[in-house]
Structure formats: C-alpha cells, structure tokens
View 1: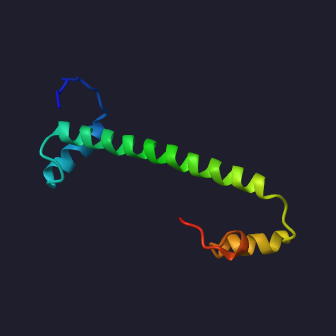
View 2: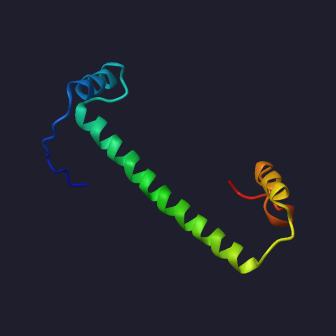
Length: 92
C-alpha cells in the first residue's frame, strides 16, 4: 500500500503518551501509533454503522409485529433477562 507523508501537531501530553507507548514496546515508532489509532477509529465507525442498521431493522420488525398485551413491568423484565418477544434469546 502506498504511503503518504503527513505532518501533524500534538499537545505535550499527547506527545508524552505517544513516546511512552513506544518506550514500553507497544509500537516501533510514532507513525505506527498514529496509524493504529486511525485503524481503531475506522473499525469503530464501521461497527457503529452496523449497529445502527441492526437497531433500525429491530425497530422496523417491532413496528410490523404490532402491539403487545404485556405490562411495562413484564417488558422490562424480559429486557433485563436478555429475552425478546416470545422468550427468544436475542443476539448481543
């Protein structure tokens, strides 16, 4: 993969943290630290998109399934127990 050289500015505190990560052996140089942080952020953003899509799908499913005769207390109990409608275990 082609590399592009960048110049960045960090605070003294951030610089100290980056240097400490290298000193304790987590990374070989400053560029590795920055690239890893970018990769982690990219993964989080992708996960967020997937989570949002899953939530939307569940909302659509809930809207299409109609109303329930359960009391608010029963619904809360199911949520706390990790169960969905009809007692089916939901993926987490």
